[in-house]
Amino acid sequence: MFHLEGNLPTRIKQDFGLPVFGIERGDILEDRIQYGRIPDSFSWNDPTDPVVCNIFSNMTCIRFAMMSPLRIVEFS
View 1: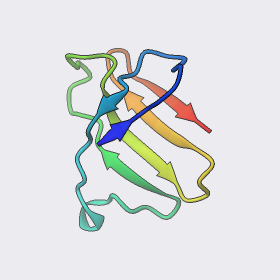
View 2: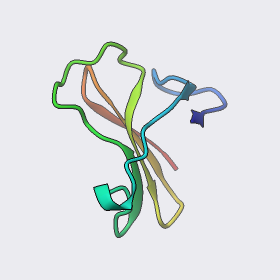
View 3: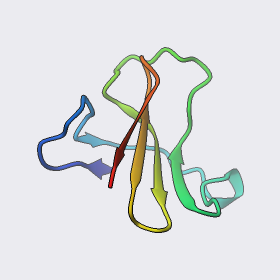
View 4: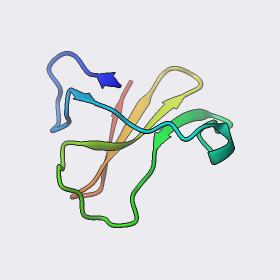
């Protein structure tokens, strides 16, 4: 589960969950940990619902991908 606090500059849910697929399915990458995946369909019921989160190893950025329209929001 994720909980984002503060005045968020874009339309993104403050509370949401993402699946953890594990190291054998590619969640642990060389430079980041990834939760969730981009779905096969580019249509998504809730455009404020993140579908992917990347937490970078250098701990300077966390990135969320959202659908409908496809976009990335980064916090540093």
